[in-house]
Length: 353
Image (tube, rainbow, N blue to C red; front, side, top):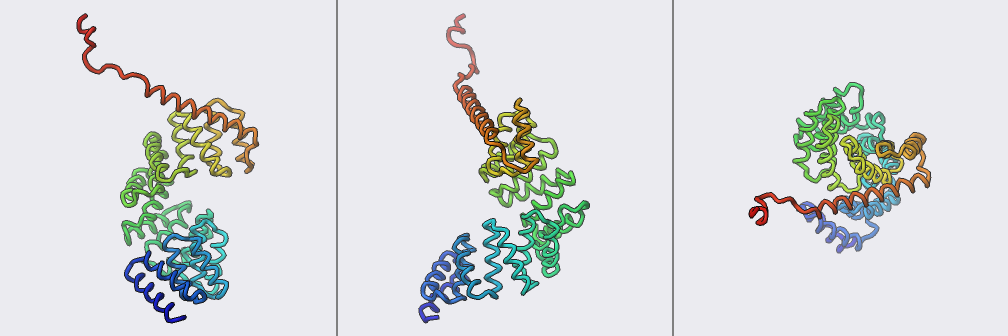
C-alpha cells in the first residue's frame, strides 16, 4: 500500500468511526483507486457499498476478493448477504454453506443460511443453523426471532411463541419479532392479540408495508373484510404492485361483493406472479363470481397443474379486465358530474310558491 493510499484509507476509517458513512465510502473508493489490489481496502470498500445499499457494486468487489483469496471468510459471508438481499438465494446459500464448512460458528453465515432457507419456504432446514446461532447468542433478539420463525409452523406453536416473547423481552421494539409473533397468533386464531402486535409494529415503522399486511390478515381472518381492505390499500400504497397484498385485496373485495375490484386485483397479482397458487385461486374465484365459469375453470386447472394459462384464456381475461376498468372509471366520472341535491331551503321560486 502506498503512503497516499494509506492516508486515504486511514481517513476513511476515521470517517466511518465518526458515523459519516457517505463520506467514508467516498474515501474508501479513493483509497481503492490508489491501491486497487489491496485486499483490506477492497473489503472495507465492499462493506461500505453494502451498507449504502449499492449491492451490485458490492457484489463485484466481493467476488474479486473471494476469487483472489478463497479463504477470506468475511468477504464470502458478505457476498452471501448481498446475494440474499438481491434475491439470489441459491448462490447466497452456497456461499453461507462454504463459510460454515471452515467456520461453523460464524454468526453472519448462520443467520444468513437460516434466513435463506426460510425464504425458500424450508423452515425445517432453517432450524439447525437458527438453533446453533441461538446457542451462541442466547440474549440476541434477532437470534431468538430467527429460531422462532423456524418453529412457527410446528403443530404446537408454543416453542415459537415463547422464543418470540423472549426476543421482545430483550428488545420490545424489535419489529420482526412483533410481526412474527402476530402471524403465529393469527394461525392460533388469537386475532385481537395479533392486531395489537401489528399496530405496535406499524407505530414503530409507519412505512413498513408488511406490518399493515399482517394487521389486515388478522382482520380478514376475523371476518372484518371492510377494515382488512382499508388496511391493505394502505399497504399497497407503501409497496405498489406487491402480489401478496393484491391477492389479499382481491379476496377481501370478493367477500364484500365488489367483484370488479376482486378481478382487477387478482389479475394484477397473477401477472406479477403467474406461478402463485394463491393469486391464481383468487383470479379463478373472481371470474366465477362475475359469471365466467369457463375461464374460472381454465385458471384453476392451470394452477393445479402448475402451468401457465393458455394464450387465448389470458387474452380473454385481459380484455375483460380492460372492459371492467373502463366501466369502473366511467362510473366514477359519472358520479362526479351528478349535481348535488339542495341541502338548505328551496329556491326563490319555491319560496314564492
